[in-house]
Amino acid sequence: MAEYWFDSQEGLRLFARVYPGPAAAAPTVLCLHGLMRTGRDFEDLAAHLAAHSRVIVPDVRGRGLSARDPNFNNYQIPVYLADLQRLLTGLAATRVAIVGTSMGGLMAMVLAATQPGAVAGIVLNDVGPEVDSGGLARIRGYAGKAPPVRDWAGAVAVVRMVYGPALPGLDEARFEKLTRAGYRADAQGVPQPDADPLIAEPLKDTSKAAPDLWPLWGAIAKVPMLAIRGAHSDILSAATLARMQREKPDLSTLTVANRGHAPLLDEPECVAAIDEFLAAVGAAPRRT
Image (cartoon, rainbow, N blue to C red; front, side, top):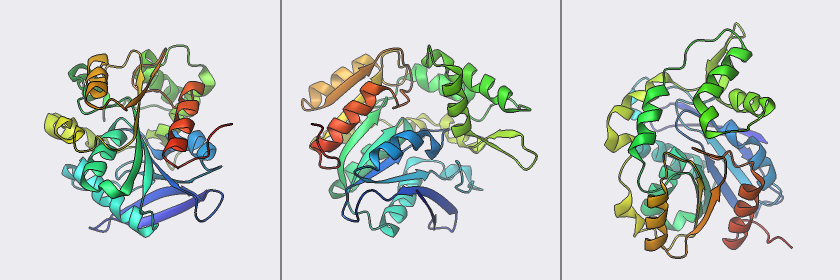
């Protein structure tokens, strides 16, 4: 894995991890994380996919090692996509398959609509053209409002409180890993959320936080897609997934038991479905 640094149009220093893959000609997979998360969520999946693909995993501005924006109004999808374009151009990635969790999936759909030749296929992890209002209200309730903690045990407790209901049965070691993907120790060694709390500000405007992408759904109908849904998701409703299938009959789907928003993508059925999908779009070899 290599670190890749690049600058936004206005000079914000941004970061991505790049897993080179087996050869220079290997297909490229782009992994896009959720709203208050970081690219570290894809650590295991990226390492797995790198056996056959180059994998690019950015920290979206305001998260992880990417700089925080002094103007919180820039925390919205059109700005993120402008950053993404600079990243892909810098890495000469002209065509990618995308794995997008939540916000990352929204980004993927908009990118496919605006740059159709750049997207070979999309894995939508627990998100669709319509975000359920109940889930959006829940996210508004915690985004940017994490209570202070003194140590990693305290950080794990906060993460368990926020994500525990969506991840029943998850063991302590996995919660620890989830926490370390979303927190980073400060100079004093105290864990801090690894995302700018001001990311929550644009969530007050539903049109920015959860844009209605149904008008784009038809425009991207020819893009191969796999939709993964947590069985108890409050972001991607069963009704929305059913409409997605009606309007795009070739949509591949997977519902993950014992998961809400969002599956972690280390579940065996998720890994198998992603491998099969990427093979179908030419971003991985087929399983034998």
